[in-house]
Length: 296
Image (tube, rainbow, N blue to C red; front, side):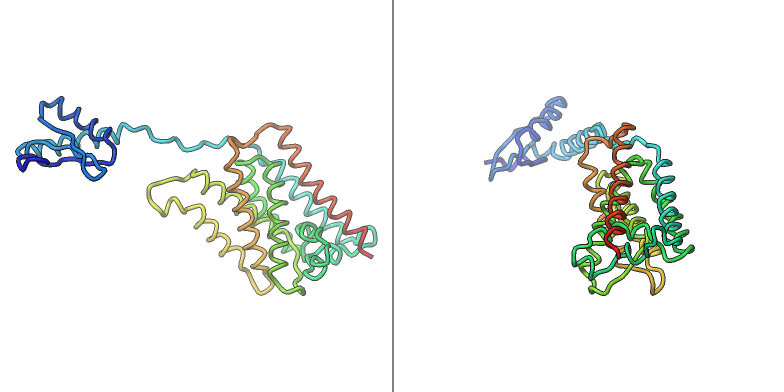
């Protein structure tokens, strides 16, 4: 039982915390005692020295907090995004030209667009081939512009190959998800799903990796808020805009971006990036081969 002439100046569930502060008081010749009550430890001093002891403990806590090393923010190793952008522009322009010329005597739009009923029947490749199709020059130019912008940002973080492999996977999943959630009569085409998957990829990685970590909540949520704002500004368009595909693209990209933070380090080896880029192109090429062969 503590005497009334003594006052508690610090308490904690851990004895070591009291011991550390007791050493501070001992260095100042302030009498003290560590007591235990109800699973907690308390540090007590004579009542007439309580204010001084509290001040010295406050000074100790303040100095100790300032001296505590801050966890460094991860610093990404910026990579070359140009090859991925060149490949992206080349592929969407090539498919646009082939579709316009009805190459191989095929109706490319009918063979490759998203068709809810046919996808439900097993024509999975449409979730990927539709990413390279466009309804006209304006549609194509818009997706080239925004795709190149977001592609540069993502390519700098993840490298050209890994970026576009992730984008192909995320946007394919997004088209699948959007198709299953909408009526079977749903039809769509365009690279905008991939564009917003790229935006989501950046936002998810930056948020989960805490590249913008700050004490204020507004800064911590900055990548998410920024991504949603861009989605709302550029992805809601007119009545012909497939808002569901844009949202699904952002969500799937965001999730994949978060998964990338599990890697100890984003691979930067040229061979690895080349393999990823080749895989992305191979997935699209294989999808188109199947689409054109099976389309009457």
